[in-house]
Length: 299
Image 1 (cartoon, rainbow, N blue to C red):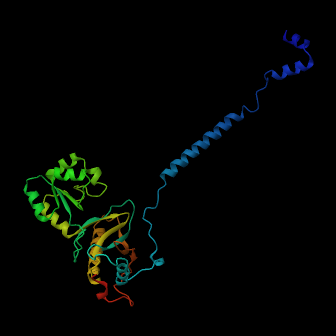
Image 2 (cartoon, rainbow, N blue to C red; image 1 turned 90 degrees about the horizontal axis):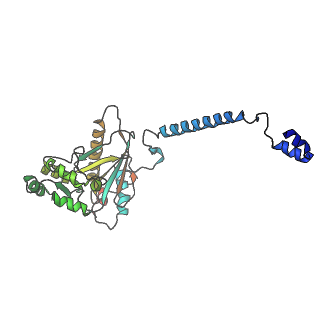
Image 3 (tube, one colour; image 1 turned 180 degrees about the vertical axis):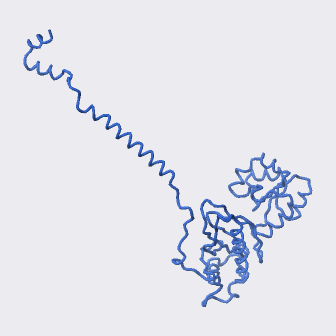
């Protein structure tokens, strides 16, 4: 019947009708589709594998240090001469010399932290806060030792009000629970002032620890560098040399006391001041052009 109808139609209409009929043969594109899908799937798999490989890729295990052969280094007296020029007009008791000890160490290794006493006092950390039960002998001993802020609620209120006018914070074990409940970790933690057993700032002998902190300096390694104030601007070169030696000897002793599988060594020593740049030291005390020691001390 359909063929009889089509025979009655004009030739142009019959051609149009034939073009609209579905093809009897399968399209040659059909076999290609599964292969394209396989290629796409394989590409996605390679991309996912590449992403995982990129995530696993880590940076260098050791901190990158500059080659000292390409740097200009100075004797101690020469570095002091230039730094004093940057500190002209400043009080010799407020501006201080600072040493930056760069270490050759691994990124994932332990860090050095300790406290040292200088042969010549720098007086950098005299403001000590003590958290201890009020009305006890520990409070009296802490105040007698020179702590600037002592107690529990008094300390908590001052910290929450933003009045953090101390350089170190100690805590007696009897007040540790009260300190944790006060929630001061988010305030003191980022500043490195939160007492903890690990850092040795939760102690029984409060008075002894306060006296040690007032006469010494606490230091900590950060990103393979230890920064320590080592002298006042009015120090003589000999006094600064003695404090530098004590600092380096203590750091080397700390590094030797680590695990045998962990190696740390002093790579570079840089001397700077409160307002001055850093000068890499070559290990010499003075050079042929260094000024006399009398010209590098006092105001």
